[in-house]
Image 1 (cartoon, rainbow, N blue to C red):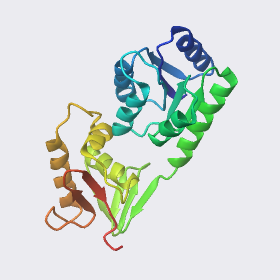
Image 2: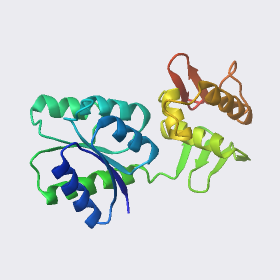
Image 3: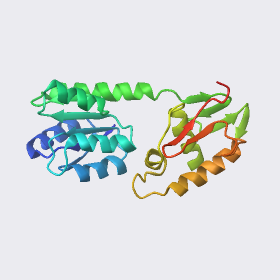
Image 4: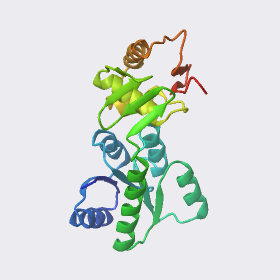
Amino acid sequence: MPSIVLIEDDVDIRRLVADTLSKEGYNVESADRALPGLELAIKSNPDLVLIDLGLPDLDGSELLRMIRAVSSVPLIVITARGADSDVVSTLDAGADDYLTKPFSVAQLLARVRAVLRRHAAGHEESVLEVGGLVIDTAAREVRLDGTGIDLSPKEFDLLRVLAENRGEVVSKRELLAEVWREPYGGSDRTIDVHLSWLRKKLGESSSDPRYLRTVHGVGVKLVDPTS
């Protein structure tokens, strides 16, 4: 069953939500403050995160932005703030759904199922194609113009993340979080070295790029060189 991280400081609500989800078969880990919750959300690699906005050590909206800076994990905000401005700003900041307190157990479970279902549907694409580059994420195989390429596990994961975001710049912090699970303690040099190896296997270089384009000061993107 999916794993869920719950970040909620109200002990009664935290217990109710955790017990409810556990009875439905979900694996639940919880925290009562933002920073321990952030650590859980990164290290546990959950399928879903539930966040209260009124946390004692850091506002939940700031926590939301911190999680979104390093992860695309589905996220539902649970809060007593019901103003339209709060809802809009929270959804714009990257939340997948917004549940206002008080709420029913049935509504909570329906929202959780809906967000997990949408996220699963968005990840059904197992074969990613960018120009002549074909990445089979299920078989962990890569072909370039019909020829197989032998990649290390990290090189494959790096290419996969870039392909899932093809045409968009992915920051080095995001790559450290997604590939190395090190959003704060990792080194940009690690990424630079693996990108260099990956470029060589794709038959290109930083001075003559085709698929891998560095946007200095921002990150890296994977593009179709024929478009």
